[in-house]
Length: 227
Length: 368
Image (cartoon, rainbow over all chains, first blue to last red):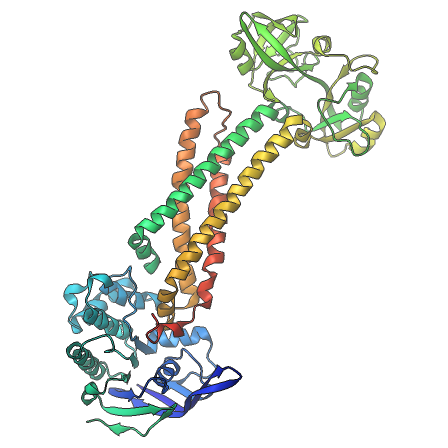
């Protein structure tokens, strides 16, 4: 269980020229560890996450998820890889308004073609893990911001991913709830043995992670152990 | 359908509104279909129920359309047809519209003149219908008998001449008037002379042909122009324009329905594009999302169409017992419903295509 980005370069069209978002980035995240990526706005953090999530193909370099290199895979294959191997925690919870908290998780099993009965039990187990078992029947508008974010995290773990990508999970939360969310992600990373990348601008929670890396102008500075 | 079902329940107001539109459009299409068929039947049922497969008209000049009102055939022509190999029946049929009166009642009727013993008369043939009756014997259609208050044995006035009801049979209509069947001689007496023709005449010849018949050669020899029975309906003056107008309205309603459904699902898909991006980012395949959205559209269409069609059938069964020419059959109720559903699904399918172009990358970041 691991995530490997090797010499990844990503450019975007910018008028007549191209803007380099990622410049030869190499990142190895072993299973069961959490790596925080920090950096100022526009440094390439979101691009790194998009490439790792297979949502965008790099111009150069390779991405390997749990040993599977994504180069040359079709869109359908990439979608399948995301379903089974990658969990994404969005910056905003991005919950579907018509679904209850439990159904937000169950939909992950449905899109993977798994049985509803097993999915229900797994969803309840994960909601319990994030402290929301008693909110399983509530829709997003009936949950607080912190609760929605916890559902977002639980949903990302529903299909037992090997890689967990977390995008600015505390940006809409106050310090106390932000710390609780980072702590939850850390605990779940260790429990599920996922290779977790946590993109954040908030350095106050970094004590909880295993490694820290800093993005600057599309380059990733050498990793340093946080603990 | 996991998300689709929940969306249907969650966004009740929006889907109820769209469902109501589908119900109303289906109701309108259903009523218009029944009315179109009912009016059509009042126009052509006497022709479509003829035991014949082709109708021979008097030959017309090139480019001149056939017309029941203008055609006159002679005895020489129908005898010629009767002798044609592959023709098992060639019966002259005279048609005219006139007025019938009985007691204080009067009604416009179409008089169909046939030879005594002709199988063209409902319940006719040798020994039935007009066969063996007095010269003024007539067979009334049920509506003619009802409108004039007549029964078998009653006498009444037909185009100023006395006639006697020999039988009441069938309920044929021609050009929106009930049909009265008379002998060909009687018909000739009440029909304005067409001039030019010597001897007995009629309007058209009802033919029964087999594959052995060389119709084109027989037409040239007899001086006629023959078309299939159902193709001859366009020769009824009012039918083509009336039916064409109603079918055009129906066609427009189908198109409008597809466009309305398409517009609704276009807006709905645009509103959901954020959710679709999230689901794609989480790994949902485009095929799964398209199937989900199309299933939702079909459920909405099927539900709306079912209610609309049921209402149209209920209204149709109520009014068809009155004077409204409404025809309630599976063809007038179920076919429009199936077309509505199919076209609506097509409109929805074209609308939800945009799911394929939603970029899952938009789910990342704080844009949502």
